[in-house]
Length: 360
Image (cartoon, rainbow, N blue to C red; front, side, top):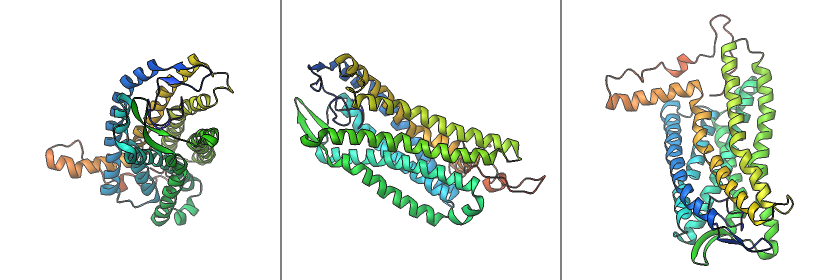
């Protein structure tokens, strides 16, 4: 009873757990898994929804009101926040589905699945674009002056959304709501003759696009970034940038790797010798835990891609100063801060040389 990817027990979609799995040699009772999911997932989804909504809305408001979307990085950060919001807006429906059944009809089933998938894939792609953007800004600074424009950011963002929609289509096409037994579900319904092909295709697509590709890009780009930063003479700035880079890599890896491993094990149970009832139940429970952990990454994105950045923190304080403290707390001094551009001058007093930017 998870989101779109958890229902691999019968390869149905979001929260579509069944009491019995007939994929085993003998019927496998899964009532306990369903009951645990019905109690555990709704409050977790609700918490992720609230935290993610607040964090990503703050990112969007800060980018639009204070930073004015003046760079390619700003464009990608904005689109990443929009991707996370699309993903998050589906959580209240999945929370209800986890505790009851799908009560919203076939159209809402397809629409919700579309938002969830497109938000997921576009979020991954914008993380990749942000990684490449940071690589260009630090390693190829001269070339980046011409390439990293707002116009190029808008164009590549548009292409990214198109690619995200195309990546989602195979799953969306086979998703529908129908009555199965005593409850309505929102599920995958692959053609019987091509069932195993589409099942394996979906799993491999999730693993390649959701884990292998972004990690490969991160390793290549951040290796070049680290080599460049290690030559930076500003030790404090260098350590701050290196710390941010490792935070991004480690958090992404920790949040998504467990889910992708369990996803592969669940889909290829027979190959790993796990096609028995006990193992199937354990894998379903592991999917609930790891998928929920992976899902919370959309709450962490505003932190690791925005609030960890020193310049963005100053813009956020400036936003509160202009729009919150002046209106509700005229005498508060907490939100007073320097203009971000002045406070973040890229030039050192001692040498007058420009230091490589961390991108945020």
